[in-house]
Image (cartoon, rainbow, N blue to C red; front, side, top):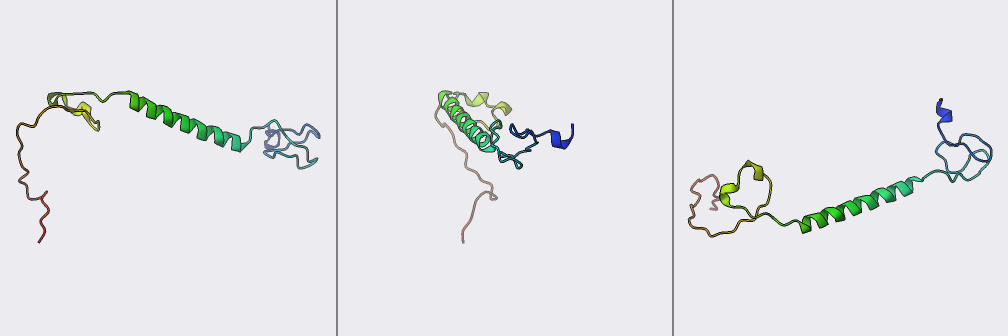
Length: 102
């Protein structure tokens, strides 16, 4: 099959129209193809629906409650909910993290 045979044929004159919506030879309208505009709108609509479903799924799911002793490498980049009281604090004594102003 050559490159000239891969397009859509005109219903009026039978010639290859390529990607055109109107035949170059007889000016007949080609109605059998889906336009790029329709494909773009379907893609944008699908993306919006997907984002809405993702948002709804996140809103429905409850944040898990864990104890401090349960946190390990599995909780990397997650946001667990911690409940309890602070019983002891240790101030940071390293001078590298303290910003001193003159």
